[in-house]
Image 1: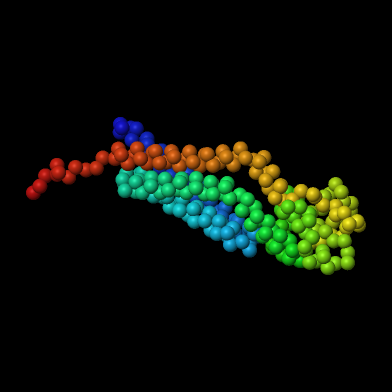
Image 2 (image 1 turned 90 degrees about the horizontal axis):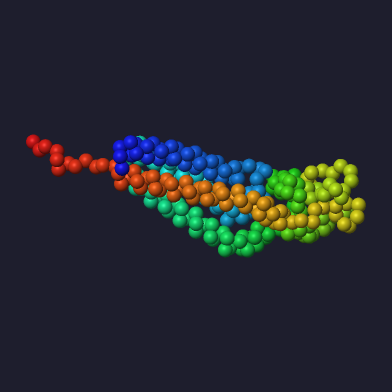
Length: 255
């Protein structure tokens, strides 16, 4: 490889790792946002240790990516072969882990859906209508995704407030504005005029699945883009590592 080509590879790898460092910061920020934001879906699933672990994994992956980007930048600029080799190995392990995680989620999607259903059912059964953080998050989801319950409106049938009330109550965030008249609250419980609640029939599980199918091209594009960037980084680091010349100390004069 010529000197000019080697220099171009070095600085291109530096730029790539700078972007990789920033992407790691975004991933870590996303994981922190899921854990700390009161309006995120993680609030509803706060009783699930698996979901919390997934958020901590996101934070760890983001921090690790930032470290990787830093090592890649240093290794490229100062042409340190051991750092470049370490960088290549870590990228390879990350790529393998991503493929394995994607395959695991795909083949275990029924288990994931069942776990989500159990968690949400527990939240709905214990929904008191006090406008707590968890309730605000679930109300936000139902209102914006125009859904009711996880599988459907019947998920609310086990709620203690609705069951024990002498009034015909329904969750306000489920209301279908095209079927209801008057002003209703956006949270808590509202009183229905008839036993047939003026709510959405679609469960939030179907709404989430519909959103994923609608945006499957974007999701696949992001996944393929990340994989392409990682492969590019591996190729660049390998080329630079192989073409860095080490000093031949046998030619140094001895005194």
